[in-house]
Length: 492
Ligand SMILES: [Zn+2]
Image: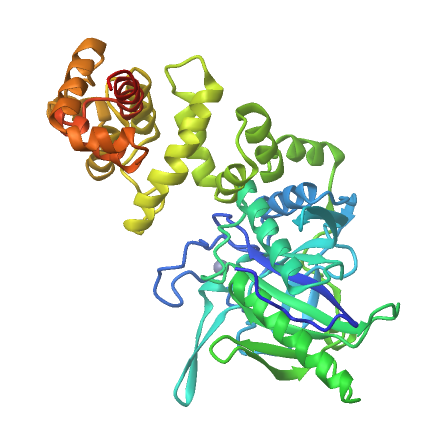
């Protein structure tokens, strides 16, 4: 889904991203309210602290700090021994206290990177910092008035700021996709951009190629999919290049992406740090991060997508494409591994290939057709493994396997049970019986046999079809083909 940015080559585009992710903690950042409000009625997950009442005292959520440090470690950041929270002051109806508790000059982490792969090249994108703050409430706009829902207020929000290291809208999308993968693997974020639990703002500027000094940047907000990130940046790059080309200035401002129109529009002039009158949060103690805790958290890091991709290729011999698809969606990769793990075969590599084929072709097709995820599917990993075992033991043919899979996908039954219930006969393994049937088919279809011998290869397909019909699908297609060719070649 690459978007043709068509950006003039005498200009260079410079992009940095600020990504906000809600953290999957049970409670909010500074109070004990539940974060599980997605389907709750408005203003039901609130208390004096997250409503911003005067005189209340916030308490730091340790799990949120742990998740932020784990993310920072996965992004190769340094974790300073000392950090603190600050007040960021601004008035807005969704900001209950009139300030947001955030981190200003001493964030929980800094100086990291992640890598993206673009045109076969590995590129490192710098991470300036990963810090922790709280989410705001939410305004629901109606005709002529707005309502406020405070449920979201105080939800832990992690901000990941990149260096301006991206040089195209496509690189920005790849960065965003990679970052989301890592957050989901870590289990710290749901990664759901469409629900707003993962949000992206972008800073973009352009400059004549070869110029060192950065151009004037704009900030784009409101992009809620990978595609809109790429489209919004492509639009904005064109707009800025056109302004420069016409000798007009670019204003430093915040712009909103309007998905339906495919354009960005000016929202407000850019704020600067001094506009926020930051100062240390007096109600919270500074954070002293012990090295022992950092190492404990490092030891808890799960296998990350790059490592898993490499392992699938090295240990299982999967192609880079298959390894990519299986690691992009963590749950699909987990499922694949379970199928391999319960195999009743010693040849794990062969089983891994068969399992990858089954999952990526048949299972994914059924999931898509039914619009469900692998976790919602009744088809257990054990059932998929069982199907592969039946194929390995030649208890069923490939054709029968498809039929059994469809049934298992609906009912959740084990394939060996389905085979018994449906009375599916084992494939004809008796070579002489199969040969007899093939000889009969050749004798009864003299024209097709003559056509084949005359070089019309299509005729072979017709004969194979006849044999499969005679054997009611119980013969293995590849042995039918081999024997058929041999027989046709030996009898004139
Ligand atoms: Zn609360």
